Length: 110
Image 1 (spheres, rainbow, N blue to C red):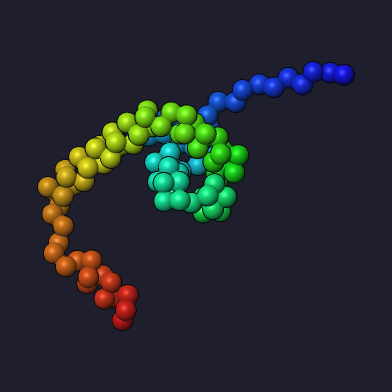
Image 2 (cartoon, rainbow, N blue to C red):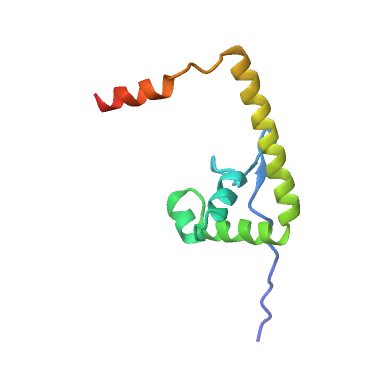
């Protein structure tokens, strides 16, 4: 009888040039997956929605999230803060036009 060598696998996340945690080989961030999980989506439903992320990777990422919730939540809060800063800078240069969304939606109806 031979022993099976079981090796731990790293969490399938890498940092991109902007510092975001991404699933390798995809354009899907940890933020997107955790947000779907918090909305009550199952790993299978998330995989169905993001086919570039394997089901095994979805489960591995959620296992990491559940074991390191405080650290991941800190990371997500920092990402939100950075996003808010970028939005504020963009809107300072290009203020949102009042009623633009309603006009664009009206075009879709015509």
